[in-house]
Image 1 (cartoon, rainbow, N blue to C red):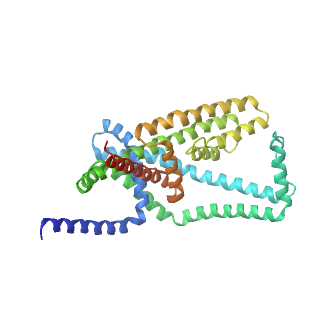
Image 2 (cartoon, rainbow, N blue to C red):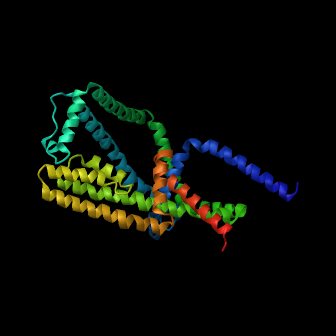
Image 3 (cartoon, one colour):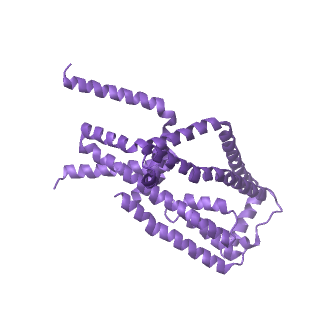
Length: 349
């Protein structure tokens, strides 16, 4: 067997091994991808820890421990009260629609322009049996879905714990070996396809950092800054609204969907000064994050237009679920880099 045939056989064997390896790890591929994403997010912390703990193994281990202590544990503790709050509010809305004697709050009815329309809508819902049945049926289905999520989480706790353990082990492995693994992937792609494959792969790390720092962390910062403002202003359901601000802040001007109705609530309940201060605070925070901090992070870490990142986030969430928040923009960034490379190749001048 000559060298060419041996090389082909090796590539065939590598392809077969890759397919079989994917088959084996497919059930746990998602937590591994989450581990890689967490390693990207935690890499600055790891570099800081290395200044005091130079051993790579201990630095990676300490980074994962701090992530569990400062991020994962608080999120786990918050998940239950958030779910309970959603369940309680959905249940109260259903009870209001089913109770003929229940009335809307006066501040809601007295809202200019829209108060009477809301009152008419509530009345029509209560008098229209078919529409009321449909709305309450949907609310009950949502209540059942929330309950089923808690039951499935409780019944499949062992499976969830295994996935969590794999994610944490993956995070540790990528922190400890990630640089070497990426260098090996780059070297293999360079030997197989040269610059044609190396350049598209090179956009993956900066795109991932742009999503983590430009979208995730800025949205988290908006939610954390909005929570004390909601508390001081006296707006109810602070935990639920703060979570909603975090989710909506992933999209342009999304946080206004939450804090603008809260401002209207403060005005309608007779707190105009508080409403003005609350709105001003949110405009400064959301506007600053939206127009300065978020583009600065994304522009500094990647050369991808913000529209492409937004489309990647929306399409990724629709196609892949929550993890698509990162996968979608990465796919579009690789596509855009291949497109640019083809243009350069076809038109070198």
